[in-house]
Image (cartoon, rainbow, N blue to C red):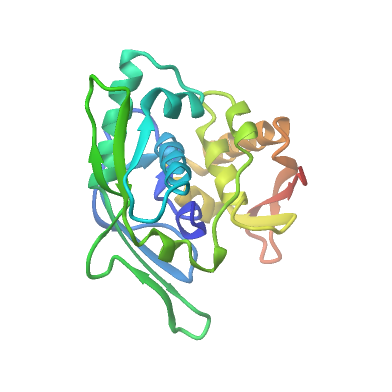
Length: 246
């Protein structure tokens, strides 16, 4: 997944229930990027589906159609393969197909380094062909994905550790993606920014508690050596994490 998507609030650990429909919404991301999204709000499971699709598409030439086994995709995410799971997958694939994005990234001098989707909206999935009675479905990614992956700015996750994260720990999964955007062994994040990026709607005290539970889970699966909440040099609340080397 490209760093600019992984750092943003495009995929968030939202609560179950009705999802918001965004219309050219400005997403939370780093200061050097402007990312807008239209479509159904996406969650951390959608991020897993997206990463599975990106991996499958990386095995064929850019712009080609890809055939993928529905059960294999679900198992790769650590999910079951019952009727409800297939219905869920169909719904999430449709959401990824109908949602559109625009991304502008600038250099420190203000010059535009990357612009995708500003004139013709960018789609995660450009085409999707499914048959509920078939074991395979066919998809094609937007052919501009290589531009978004430019300069080798993308995350590399340990998928085995991701599958070890317990159910109900979507915030931990979202943080794993965020931490993977940097090779720095020690990383620091403002709690205020993290709360917005993770789309946490509750009180800050509740967010702190949820954040610490997620950090403990990432320590358990050895994504992190250690993490804690402290003060920045400006006396603002911040999260500091020490990344595991494995």
